[in-house]
Amino acid sequence: MQKVQHKIQEIRNQKVMLDFDLAELYEVETRVLNQAVKRNMERFPEDFMFQLSKSEWETLISQIVISKTETRGGTQKLPYAFTEQGLAMLSGILKSKKAIDVNISIMRAFVFLRQYALTHKDLTEKLNELEKKHNKQFKDVYEAINYLITKDRQIEKQGVRKQIGYKTK
Image 1 (cartoon, rainbow, N blue to C red):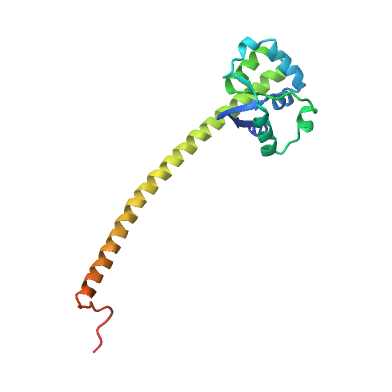
Image 2 (tube, rainbow, N blue to C red):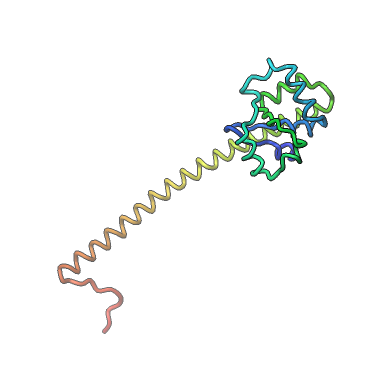
């Protein structure tokens, strides 16, 4: 499952997997995967699959440190990104035993990431609550310190100094 998780990217604020990564997992050529998808395009609306723009692809290359020739054989076609729904749809058109096993692993990875994100969100909210609580406490302390400082200054202005420390005999 970790192998799958590392292939999940975030593009256009969506968790997706790229066609060449899927082809590697399914143990088929990228063009074979894309041909199967093109024969069934009515199953893949834009919220299931989209093609990366040139700038998205260049950004992704720099982020994950891969070369175009390493992953794409030097072709000029931009990769397709499949959302979780698109991956589920792939299981309907790729019916080999390998495709079924890989899709199960992919779905488990997406579920794990979703659960992790929810847990992370809960932790973030709890930290924000603690910060608000402690900021109020610190605000009270700062107000008390400021009150004492201003009170001492007022006493000094009046010419009466408050003795600090121990009285000596």
